[in-house]
Image 1 (cartoon, rainbow, N blue to C red):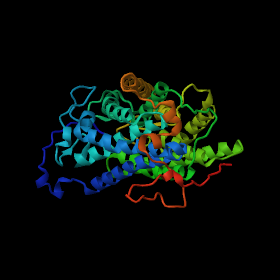
Image 2: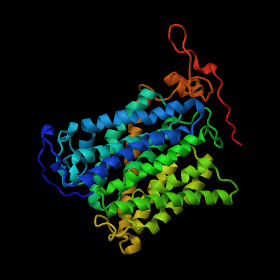
Image 3: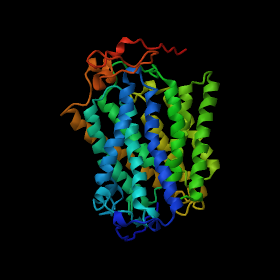
Image 4: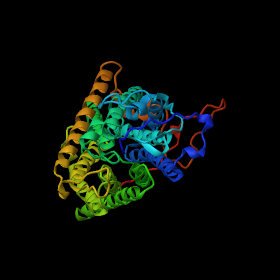
Length: 452
């Protein structure tokens, strides 16, 4: 993402013609990438939904789903402008492009070959999935309205400034030299750290068991993994911003790291005597998270290393997570936070300027100071996300309250928050009474799922 500045005319939407798109192929690629990244949010919902217990699955799906509404409305109103609008300083964007009132103008800073609207939509999908990731840390114990308020505020005060610092015009971390091709710091470290802070503020679940597994629908998780892997094509390769060789490099690196992460997890599981399907789904996610900051800066051979090393480290962190004092239900802090940190650090080792003129050589290629630039980005994301998350949740905790009561938590968020239940049945979903009101759905027995 280049940072040159240009002044582009605002075009009236009613008079736009196809000639305004300098490269239709680039515009098409970015729109396809936007759809891929948008798909990642429902994919995440399935991934998370399969890992929670039956009484919370609908709520877990909804926590991701509602981000698509809250965040994109915020993005249109002022979020994009705050993250990528004309800078008012090295720290923040402005509100000059609020309501996306720039028609279909082209912009040298972000979208020189296609309308800035396409770029705004693409970046909006990143803004959607980032807070959705946090929901995996708060399974089954947070009230819905405080969660929605948190998402709206967090996107504004945490995600938007971070995106500006790393990717925005005159962003200070970008000017410093921090490399983050597709969101290792902006997306994964920020969401992982925020998930950790949120889980600490909320406290452990009432029925939390350090060695317990709450996964109840592994096929959902497998489906989510498949779709996330596919969606990451747009997430990483789309961050090249053009249909170019750089996009091809990012795509191959993405698949290589995911494949290496999957095989690494399976090999470790085989050595230890058992390969769980739900665990195997985590392997490629670790590889995908770790390669995200580096996919446009390293060669495919190094991408395999990005899949192997972080997966080994995170495997054993998860193996001993029962020693940790916090209840991060779906391991957001470890998988996304630690995965993003390791990936961002390794970017400082293995990046090559010859791969991407917008990058830099890493420590392995004669530029050791790049490691310090990466560490600066890592520490900034950790500190800023921690402060923002605590600064939002603590006031909410002591005003409107953020946690369900013990009784509500034990009953489950599906019935308490949504008035619905997830059941697997061979009968119709519900019947109706004579006045057309649905009868109690719980009268139908669920299938019994045995986990050997």
